[in-house]
Image (tube, rainbow, N blue to C red; front, side):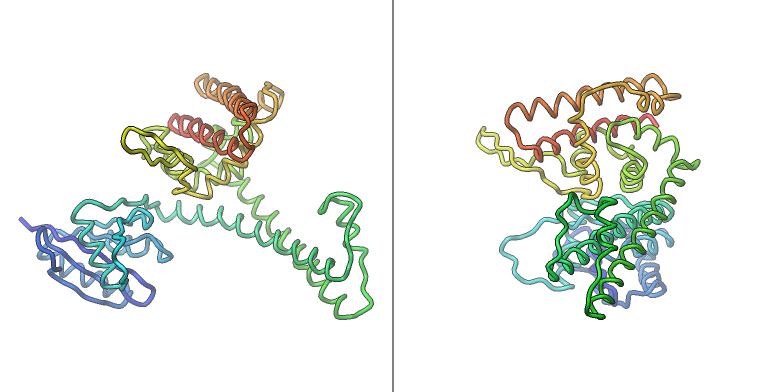
Length: 362
């Protein structure tokens, strides 16, 4: 029977530092730096696997899950480690690639590391496409800032209402400048904004089409019965989480989103602080935005009836319960003097629990 070897990998774009530890001992049994290339990586681990049962790990980073899939392809067990949960020594002031690889190898052997969920390639591709929408949305906001700042530098301010309404856009198109370069710059800014808005509209349409396709329709329809959740939000939650069954309790899902309060309790004294925010920030942002809708009065209108039509009784009950509970939670906290931001974060935490419950029934 082969003995177990624990391989810590410090993965970079150019090379990979590997430190391999046996079941015992402070020093690595093998240490090597190799080029970050599929052939060389697989060759090294195939050779190592002839002698040992290898358990490898590396930190989640910009390198993605490529290294994980290379090892999986040749039957080597590998885990992708959450960087924020790696134990740190306060007195350790030296950081090198070799030290990082050794630390990963030792901690992996000790069972002190927490791995992240690795999606299938098709799930990762869909997640990146939904994330593209977020990036393009940011680009649209940047272009709007370019235009407003340019006008501000030329002493032009819109004072007839809110920015980016139809009236404001007509005001922007009417602006003219005596200097030809000012005219050119301003024209390019407007053209750039129109291009980005057209791209955003096209991506929104594609995501909407995918949301109502065979693969996602059932899950999306379940989520969109919740107040403040529509196709874009639902697709963001689904593609970022992927597998809801890996969370055994609603509280675990709330923790994954960083929506639970931090705690520093000792000596019988409990101290709770701000949200941990140590989780998926994209879903957290989406749910906090959705939580703002809970301030509105509870009611079963025609739109709600249309969305719950065809759903099972269990799902309908969850939807109605969510409306009442989240609305009550919002105003109860407001009446206690809590600020709206903290209130929406608390509502988002409970909303995530309802999402977990709905997705477990999917």
